[in-house]
Length: 432
Image (cartoon, rainbow, N blue to C red; front, side, top):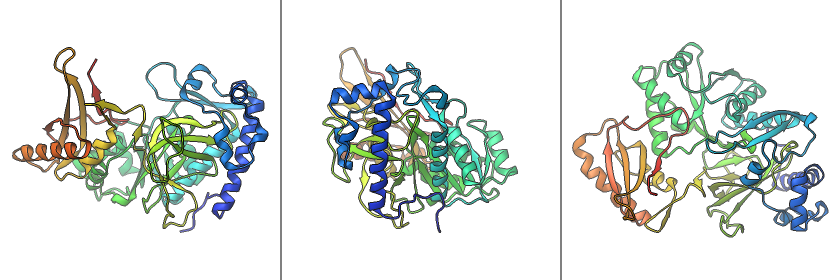
């Protein structure tokens, strides 16, 4: 299938030429347009003219979330206010939100990128796309909406929550694509199953944003909703980098194609800030190539992933990274071992009889006592209580073998752990 909304570059060499052109433009743009960036460059002793090849990106200073907070309410702004047509903010719940400015061209570029996502998911203009993510100041709803309109399909902008209305719209409007968080996807799949809608609605694809979805969760969503496993897609994105729509895994699901004609992705060791080898896990660091209002120069996202050093069977020249495996600041330390929730996620996905939902609870039984970890795991909906002991031992053994720590495992009823239309909280650290 020929893709629309794809890059003008047809070869890797042409793509790199686009990147170098965009990098030079961005460095010159921020140096002349932003006092914050100019000061950072001067402290680093680098001038725009020093950027001659792509590897020269390593001469540039890093940007972090601290720069966004310190520059509130209009951090990293590199254009006059009369060129700012919109702001968006992160959905953070602590401190001041990360606020980013957008020019008209930024909004247009973002819509073009997002339309490419729908194209890579093999959507067509005949699709009816139900957008069940948050609108308002958040980037999610606007991103899915503008991209859908640019792509040319029918949008159904319902927003999150309200499962009664969601199901009614699935039936009445003939929705074919549902866009939501993975947690919302599970919630909707359970509603579809309970209401006997599977096979009676036209839903054939789901596009998940905002959070990682384990294979166990995906399998469960597919079984309950009737949507084929290979029609569940991941879409990354963050407010700092336009919003959702900065990449998508295609129908082959070998990795997430990211739009390297709009930003450069470095994968660095979060401790040394040196590049890791292709295929090794590191922190995503992004530099925008076309963003006008609030460009990013080597922005440390704290998201962890790895580059996938292979060519996708789909034929796209767009490089790939893995799903977001976690965040460097989401890691918790237990018994002197660094653990990411994605570790637990992956282990549980490979154990037969385990459901898709779990919670990690960390606590101490007394002041200055030893750390304890309890892993609450749902059993599958058709599993029996008498299998709990065997299932719990299997989980304990797998955790011990692969992460090298011991934990208590509590098997709970299917559906007993919370569902949410937003990101589901799974780690509860109750230690002081």
